Image (cartoon, rainbow, N blue to C red; front, side):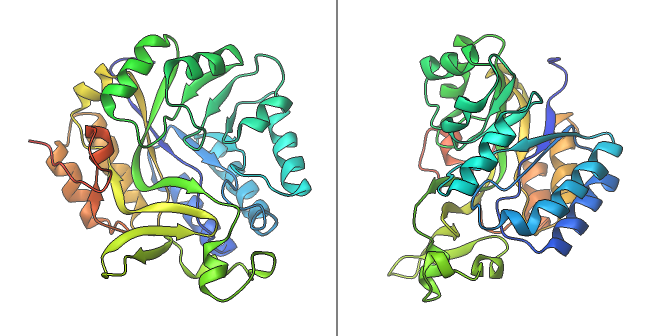
Length: 302
């Protein structure tokens, strides 16, 4: 990957959107955005997959025709036989895939290339090297890692591409329980897919009424919106070669354009943050983890 170019990629959709919204969203992405790569697939909850598989397949065709590279992502917490069969089928192909649960590696052809997603627990160089030995060519590090920690990982793993989670509510954890069903008085097995009522996740507040986290079915996310606004020179020095943007309901075309301008040096970190705020992010801007601080912090560029 050239030092002069940082890729802008779109991560997999984490939320339960309608088929119509999915179709409209990816049509706009295909026709009106400047992206290098788009990840597709149901990552969070296998119960959603039958309802979105058709729209995502159509989106893949449209994106490919538009010149975007499409990579399919596996589910991160397969819990049912159907989930596990789906992961095995996707991981068993020869094409590039994103792995979000280590069980998928049992089905991967030897040395077949794959991307390690941010929902794998890869926090150190030894774990990253083990994945490289299995065929990993790109890593999207866990969102809790600071940029210096990512830089040390990249330095210890030459040849491993680093893709930084740069925009969106941070994916923090997954559970066997469905928070959305619980809050609506439902059981997980009969959840009625009520997570579709919160297309950017359901805000969670403390007992004191302070914004805290967000939930998305079985997933816990940050309340704030990550914006990786560190100077491009620092990102490159840490080995970052791609910036991942997570789909949300705000003006994603504006978000994509802002990060493209930022990656090319046409926008300063301050300009990037201003453009993102104008695009309607789902929560306040945060970047604390990248600075080795609490994730909820916002440390604007000097």
